[in-house]
Length: 226
Image (cartoon, rainbow, N blue to C red):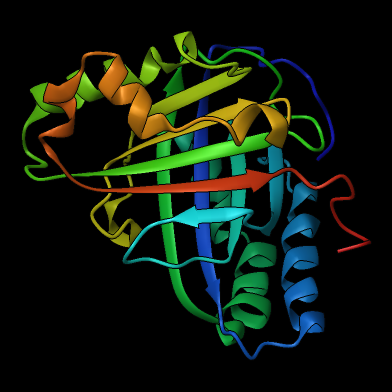
């Protein structure tokens, strides 16, 4: 979807899927996967969809190559999308045969503002946090508070963060965030780890077992040319 309509409510459901495409996969099959995903923009539940290759992955243990980001009005709409025959067909025919690994995280973004669909060429920094003790609700609230204030330290045009509510495919990551920038020139100079230190929130780093950070650029042409 290319719309830049602002959210009618201040709550959206975020859905991120990461794919690790097999290295020997022909480019035509990767394009078929991406185009198949873009075909799902016709489903009425989908408010926004972007998919494509990652610009950069920052992780010592996980290596993904592509990302899907979609937004919905509610968890019910996300569930309807998940079981829709068109989605099931794309997963079965175009995704599963060419991937080595997959990860998915879902969360409700409260106080959402800005366009539902970030403009073409926007840069997104997507972060996933795994806690040492996932049962500590106080720590989760504290970390979400820090993430929610990160737009004070950088030229972030839109910030979304929340707690994952679909743990089955999340590899233990329970907190996620998306920071949207005008482009790579605004994103590339930043080091979010350093911002955590400078913000005086060292106590937030202690409960973390792992952090996965990915950078993605919204394609200018979102379907036919991919």
